[in-house]
Image (cartoon, rainbow, N blue to C red; front, side, top):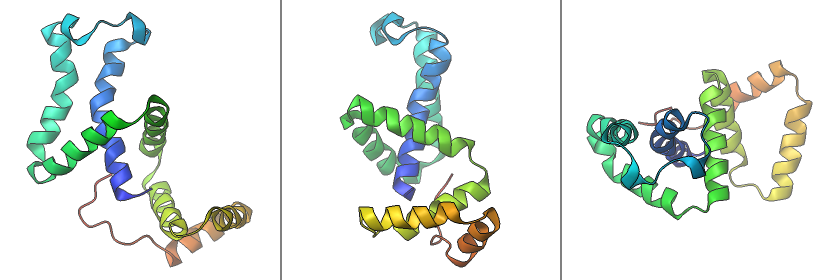
Length: 146
């Protein structure tokens, strides 16, 4: 997973996670349009984005770019992004390191090479996988945040 994609997913979650709290068990069609939300509901939706915007002023251009990308995504792609972010958030730090290393290793491979690589990966024991990640780490993330 690229650093940018991870950030995109985080930004998307900041935009969508409060909606989940607001929605609870309601179906999307049953929820009101923005103009019909109460001021408290609007604040609940906006607060996480505002907090992140204020907390990380150096990242404001990126946050705007991610929001634009999110808006341009078709619904199936948004669903995949949400699912990927939920998986990412559920990972341990070690699993995230592994995912970064695998992504970095496969980044320039064509589809067949990636498939062959992953077939070999799945045949490795957990210890072999851990050893591989230690010897093939992803590049340093710089100011990347999980």
